[in-house]
Image (cartoon, rainbow, N blue to C red):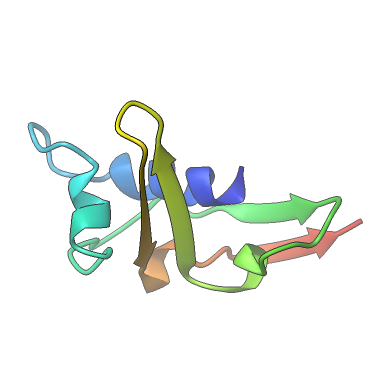
Length: 80
């Protein structure tokens, strides 16, 4: 869920008319801003709460891509 949130946070500021999947095709290199987000976890797993990376799957094609960008680093993380 957190990786999906990172993708949506970046895609929300992405240029109109361009498929947000382009974020993944470029590895996130052209993200210039994103909606700030925090993370409240109930189960630690990949460390996504403390890094600037994400892995996203596209169900329709079966593609799985990763991206990294400092704009999707959570501004806070809480582990319950």
